[in-house]
Length: 201
Image (cartoon, rainbow, N blue to C red):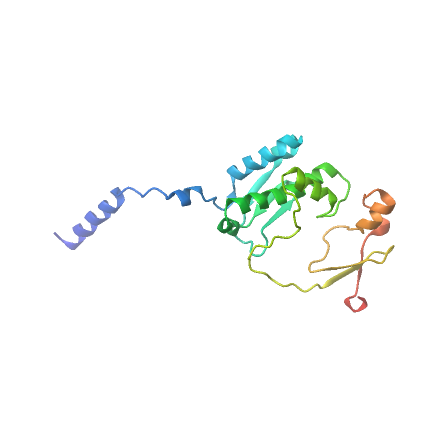
């Protein structure tokens, strides 16, 4: 048999060979992007709390670009984003992080237009309602850590509280304590943070 026919015969064998079925672990592992199973889990957690509107909107995604962060919550889009490395620590850790981030969405949903602190009493109550008691604001997982240098500095014109940030504010942001004290927690232009030179801090 000529070399050409041998190659044709080998190609036919490879094409006819059935693909091996995925292993159970590979089949169960969430792919990058949206995770329908976790979205269903999120809805099951939110519905008993009378948050049907939020439950319908919630979206859960995996983001392979995440490194040191376990998860994030984007309130405007009702979006929870998770670090795929969470799977290395088991389903229990994935579920805990999902609840942690859902608590951010739930706290803001309940607050409406009222401004709240990211990890304030509203978030803590949402954590308890989702079954997380004594939840900490940051995870303690052995994920790689990065250090950032603050380059942007702001001061409240009323109470002189100073804030240091790695990135600048992208929208108007006011001192939460002053807004709570003088305007029931709602944004007030009088207490908008003013940018100051780093040398003045």
